[in-house]
Length: 207
Image 1 (tube, rainbow, N blue to C red):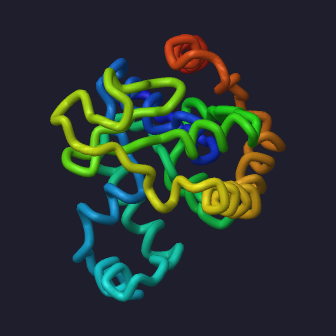
Image 2 (cartoon, rainbow, N blue to C red):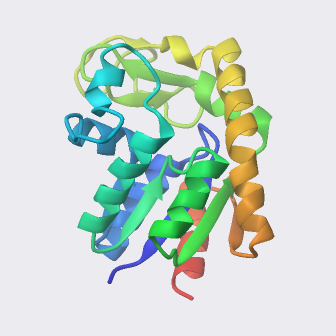
């Protein structure tokens, strides 16, 4: 059985980047709630299919998300879980269905998260990501890949970013405390360079 890793962190903490690297490093699946839901839109549960909620723009209920994640984990020979659990009841369910080898929390100060997220620019043509400070294009406002215009997404404005961080804190802080109380949470300094963060993660996972 491959490594079973849970990666926690606020929007902008770098979970996606680190998860992809971990999946490659250990040859395990990168399981995100969004991907799992999209891949299993028509999976029948006693509460209906994910599609029935997604098409109405409604939040998919915990019970449905739980079943989808369970199916994804059962199919995986090791995984890094990114974006789940989002609340305490999901965390308790996860404990019932699997044993984790590592629970990691990428800790980043709120002001740093705001700077990272509000500085993101996305190509309107090909979707490539840039950043006004950390990953600048060769020519300001122009995509290096295809020459498309770089734009700020609606959900990357400061007001929206702070709201997203507030929602994260309200829902997911209890999850972090839950794992901390269990004595299994390892905090990683997420304000280092991506390479340094990855080295710290691998040190923990390899123990």
